[in-house]
Image 1: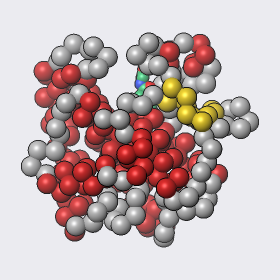
Image 2: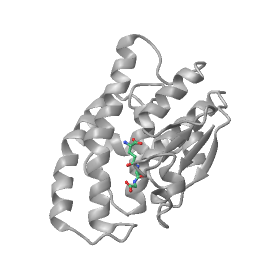
Image 3: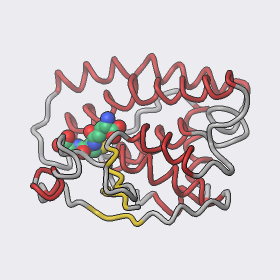
Image 4: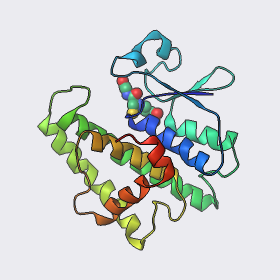
Length: 210
Ligand SMILES: N[C@@H](CCC(=O)N[C@@H](CS)C(=O)NCC(=O)O)C(=O)O
């Protein structure tokens, strides 16, 4: 299989972290990773649009030649395709909670963080937008508080002792924040400690470039 990706972008990075975490658990999925140069606009060219009509990354090319183009669908597919040592494990409640936190991070935090980064210091050269930045900063506070509260029982990772998809999703967006030189943590020491701890993991050291 082939994963079409670009290293800095959060959604591909989430899948890349997931693949690296599974590899650390001994599951080598033999997925070739191919960069689509989004700065040069390659994701909007016919070659990539044939993989993903929405022109986004990641896209996973399956053995039958088809493609999956949603990062969480790609991860859930890989969980089932390679079922040994999955990240989604435990009781239905454990799995429900893990997906719940992942969705909260992705839908409530990752979007505003990405928009905030582009509004203050866009790597794609978008003009600065103070009004948008203020709106996005406000939107980030509730999910950041939620995560700080989640960590208040001193768990090392977002779902406890074991790494989860939510850890991958959160760290993927935080890498983008580091790249645009924005600190989103504020007075949230537990989240800051989680960030430092997660970045020490072998999978993170292998995947993260910033
Ligand atoms: N819901 C999709 C979102 C994919 C997405 O928006 N990817 C971004 C990079 S993080 C992208 O390709 N942006 C380029 C564009 O939208 O033109 C997923 O989770 O995979």
